[in-house]
Length: 208
Image (cartoon, rainbow, N blue to C red; front, side, top):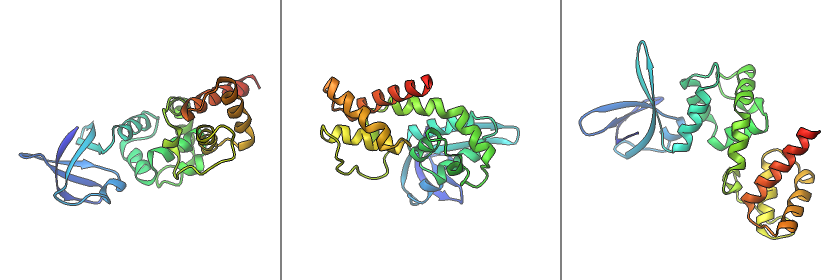
């Protein structure tokens, strides 16, 4: 990681003044647009070593750095391409695109063609699905607040249904399963309901 004040900003980089040295760090366009010169910043970093030099890539959240590392482990995806993807799409949008096998969403980013998008999905789908299943709150993936839904059991089951629909399932697929699990186990925690429903739906697809 690196901590310092913003000394200068370029098109794709920030220069952080750490007190005695200035470090140029590649950052996402989202971060560039949200900071100002002189602002104190702490970034989680990835250091790339190449024959022509060393480059730093920085992210304000550890989870975003983790996503960056997963992306660059995909064959054909380098740090600049991964940074471009995380500049154009939020971490949650990338997760949802991979889980839902939306190559068209990933290939909206300049430099990522359909073949590369499909490779990203192929190599990361299992990991992203496991990540979603392990989330404490499925609402972390939703772009907007969950509205009131006519699902018996209150907010927990309603949030679970909404989150599962956000992952590409239809209400017809998930609502009966959520309702049954909620009734049989008297479970109202949305995160647990999502994980149990995903597990059951995954088993059905495997058996089918």
